[in-house]
Amino acid sequence: MEDTILLFINGIHAVMSFKMIGWMLLGTALGLLVGAIPGFTSSMATGLLLPMTFGMQSDVAMVFLISVYIAAIYGGSITAILLNTPGTPESSATSFDGYELTQKGKGCEAMGIAFCASAIGGLISYTVMFFVMKPMAMLALKFGPPEMFLIAVMGISVLAMLTTGSMAKTVAAGFFGLLLGTIGIVPTGEWRATFGSMFLAEGVQVVPAIIGFFAFSEIFDMVDRENVIRSSRNIVYSVRKIFSGMPMALRHPLLLLKSAVIGIFIGAIPAAGASVAAFVSYGEAKRTAKHPEQFGQGAVEGVVAPESANNASTGGALITTLALGVPGSSTCAVLLGAMMIQGLHPGPQLLRDQLPMVYTIIAAAVISQLIMVVMAVLLGYSFTFLLKVSTKVLAPALIFFCIAGAYAVRNAAFDVYLMFAFGILGWFMKRQGYSLPAVVLGIVLGSIADNELMRTYALYGSGTVTSFFTRPLSLIILAFMVLCLVHKITSDRRIRKLRATNRTQQGGV
Image 1 (tube, helix red, strand yellow):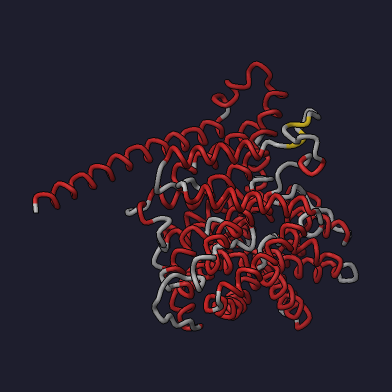
Image 2 (tube, helix red, strand yellow):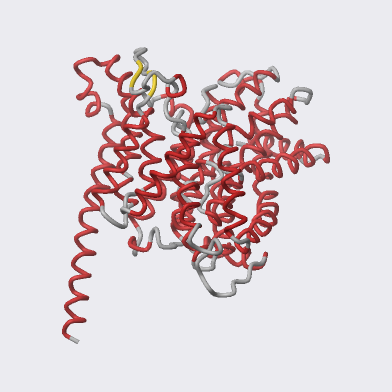
């Protein structure tokens, strides 16, 4: 333990030079700006800025890219809260309640909640990374295809937790998303539902789907109102209000901790990612809330849970990337390539030969969180002025950024058309009471579930079904899913009884 603490202290000393701090500030600023632009994911941000690191020393390059990685997820929450337009997929779940708070005139407070929860979630994950990197890496190795398939299915079961309306419509929307997520070339080499299009061979791209369902469908609703928010009150936006929102997140310490643990665990599982962690954490927060009916209506917990989880997942993903050499997320895949370009070899060899570098990265991640709180507040305050802009000006500007974000994924006009189609479909589904988050979550998880089920079948053949019940980790995941379902059914019954009792009492009066 003393050696570990000494390594961490040396790592802090290494990143506290003027040169390192300067690159961290630049990486944080660029990550926040890129993350706030709809469609520009954290992986795209790190990929675009990767060429800047080619002439850098290895430690400087990794500190810069780590700052970009973490900041991009922060930036995505700003537009998710203010405009219902998640800048990154990882911030999609934040928009459910964050945007509702904006509609109620509490956009600054919502950003303060998000920034505080993000910082705490990130700091918890890096603390865990400091102590249990090797044990977490060994646990991730035990997750085979059966467990990965069940993790995806577990994410789908969270759909039941997300709904405040018709559970049937939410589940139907989720399975529709699942079908969309299975489009493309399957591991066996077959083309599924591509209609001969090369652009669908890789599957339905998540970024155009998110922009279409969340952002573009919201732009259609902007047409009939003068400003972004519907409130007629004169709402004051200030830095002080952002800071005043931070203690609101601290009032939920257990939720912060639980969401961070969920984020770390899911982040450490290759291919699961921060988006899944945010959705799962949101669903778990709603499942255990005293007033689950408030979720989707501007609940503080609905911002705390996904923001704590998606930032905590960065630490979990880095654990898998550094300790195993297996990217824990798409962004970590870029970081993996950057390390190899710098002559580093992620995995057990890195832990054996370059341990000081590992703790320099951990120290940089911790300090980046502190820098980002200040920079995110300033950027978030700047973005609040967008709420005072007329929709006649803002809507065309958002359409431009939506088109640019969708096109930037593959430099293909097809993705723009796809975004338009999803936007129209999302606008129609929202008016009919179907859950748009359920569709997007289905798309994210569809390819994971499909691929892992095929791998499970290749391994176990006729024993595929029994493999889910004979592996300890699979049984734990299944038990959790059953508990979620039972809790949902019982809570719905309790809410119906309470409503019936209230109607009876009101009738008596």
